[in-house]
Length: 391
Image 1 (cartoon, rainbow, N blue to C red):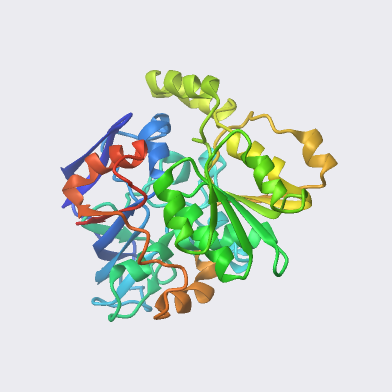
Image 2: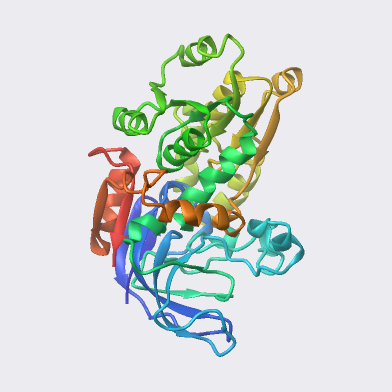
């Protein structure tokens, strides 16, 4: 089959790789009909090379049609249309039963002290082949699927794989009171949905992003969008009686603008052999924290900062005095996709499309064009906000 593979820093290519097969009785094979490039895929493209091998298949936002199941699979059959959550979880362990599927004890990567395995995402998370491919092997398939209907297009359902539940969880973690104000830092795909979720829940939503096209898209959905200027925190405070927002979602993560020192660190790690770069990455402050700092500044005293963007450093410096003085709560973590599906599936099926899932994709291209689209997405060129690949 054809699949998008990692080949080196800022180098991915579509290659012929072996078709996936049933390895365990609990597996299923899904023929992929749509798969997307996620912002966190760019971390693999740019930074996580020490934990990837050339030829690894990328991608963790995918859906398609079941073509084969193992003999222990009872909830699926060939012909079923499914979305595949990016977490790989069992559904019955201590963590899964508490809605923490991203921490699944059956699939935890204990070698690296990491949570549950993920599709298409480095040795830190199991090095499981991903979904930017023609076919995908789905482990523990009875639980790791979201069965959907036949009548609506893929785009209505695809984002249940990751970015929509990630945004929903981010807003839930932000603990905004009824009628309160939510600030969203970053209007990439997760930020777009976080802002729209806030509007849907009746909050006033203030969002910040340096890219005009992203601000314009958010504004179409009732969001008050602001450029990333030196005084944007002061602007947002002025709009909230000087207090700041009740809750803030940081939807940016480690590649925020700013911090030339950390940017240089990224470049150094990218040039080192994997064996040398791994300990440096595991024990250094490798995150650009501009979005975190701004979130802490803009949240009101007693408010909550919710981190949805991915961070990876072990020695990052946080303003502990400010966090303590303002009594700020901080919540974060990999999304627990299956926890939120009962809330979200009826909303994406709703004919009114309350989250505007049909107004997010800016580029839909064949899988063979994926390498060029990785570069376009990373550079934020051509108005690129969300890319869907069609194998």
